Length: 360
Ligand code: SF4
Image 1: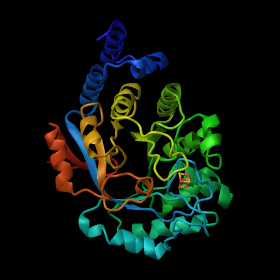
Image 2: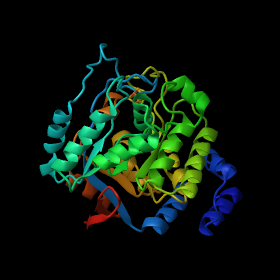
Image 3: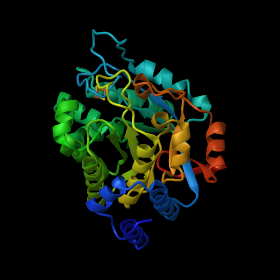
């Protein structure tokens, strides 16, 4: 380990916060195993030998989207190609209900920016599921979707969140953060919430006691500086108004997008990003290796690089798979438990809010 890495290791050990230069040095270093070891130690300190997963049902209400982000293979025009669809509230209920016997503890609702669905529709979907299955937590709508509902309805962000909370929304996922560089956002996704707007939605959600997650989309046209800046902005918001439960780094999957010329991130980059995020985000309790996008082998190794969560056994997922995620659309609980056990950790089923349901 070189002197600079040793300095960083000392900082981590003595709970001194890493700064931009430290984060960038970690990205520049080729000592992957040393970085991984530091992150693993940090993970052990923060969550012991537990590795979390949950059992959920993804419900993607519609793929009709006015945003058409360049990195997305899911959103389509209302009357265009690509199989536009929209579930009615009853269909969404039936779709969710069909998974209840699989032991799910969460409905995970993420969709697109539909041109004219009103807030009432979203509230009705949540209300029906909540009334039908009051014990199943509803994690729903990214900040980008909430911001879109705010624009379409003319209601404030706080009012939109209150309507959804009253209907039964328990927490929010972390999607749509992409990368906090508005120049890049204007190139890749100009029609949706910009960086400050995304952060504002989460700030308000946290003020309203709605827990959320956060993500970072990496491996497209951003720089390593952008990635570190992104992590620091999340860390600052968490200091100011805590409420993030987990950070989920998402590698860009180029297939079927208009950026197919960009190469998929390497395993080294994926593992380094997991490890660096664990080290930089000292105030966010969990780092998730999202197996659907990373693939199971890298997700499993990521458990030794600082990740303490591997997402869930997802009954069906469309968004990542539209972009060519080569993973299965779901994995059995038994397979997930064995995969975690093989890594030497304690498979721990959790609910959405990280209450432990069962250790295996
Ligand atoms: S990433 Fe989301 S907002 Fe952007 S085009 Fe895809 S579905 Fe629409």
